[in-house]
Structure formats: structure tokens, C-alpha cells
Image (cartoon, rainbow, N blue to C red; front, top):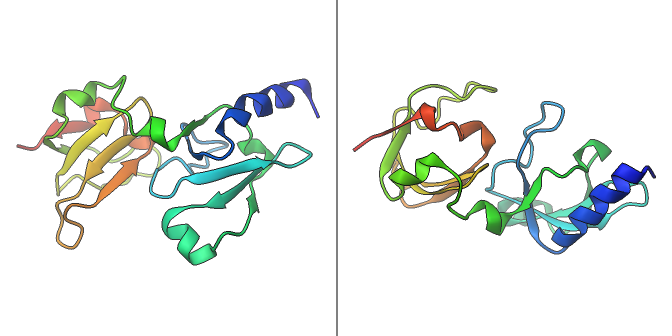
Length: 159
């Protein structure tokens, strides 16, 4: 195993036993960047791949089976779910507790979510944003949005 990979694994060891999320995509893959179902980090394989279990809704479907991510996911772009929920380092926090909506689609996948129906901003960290829905059927539910939604210029106050 290369020295750089060993250093990365040593850094990520602090997250073993915690629910984690990605802060950035890897090779254009945005998997595990939104927080609806973070991963539970179990450890690493002998060649450095991440061993994990699903949490939340995915765990109800897939059970407590152990899975392994490809090696390119073993990098420093992971944080704990708890840290992602903290309101810190984001201009959007000036609208905390208020209804906001997007004014343009997301840059990578062109998602038009939140452009018509506003959501309430609960908190925004550097890489994630926790919002509460007001749509019929989802009223009061929250979701943690990933880095693709984090540009403050893409949001306006809806009230």
C-alpha cells in the first residue's frame, strides 16, 4: 500500500463507528454526498477500500450487511453526519429559519428541485444544507442537501 493511502486511512480512522458523508464528488460520482442516508464506517480492507454499512431507510431495505466502496472513494473528502448538520461557514445562515427557494438549477445534474416550492432553511455548513419541506405529503420532513446545492447565489428569500 502506498504511503499516501496509508496516511489517508490513518486520517479516516477517526471516523470508524460514525455515520459519514462525502463533501465532494469523486470522479464525477456524487454518491454519498447528500445526507438522507449516511454510511456507517466500519473500517478498511487490506488494500485500503472503505468497509461500511447502510443506515436509515437503506438499512431497512438492505439490512446490516457489510459493503465495500471502490478504492477511489478512499480520500479525505469525508465528514461526520453530525458535523454536516452544524450551521457554520455559510452565507445562507442569515436566512436560518426562513423560507428560501432556488432561482436556477444545480450545476452538475440540472436539478430543478426547490425552484417552485420553498423550503425552510434549518442550517447550512460549508458542504451541506439541512432544509425542511412544506409540500403536501412531506410537510415537516427534513433532508440534508449535498455540495451541489451550496452556492448562496442560487437561493433567494421566499417570504
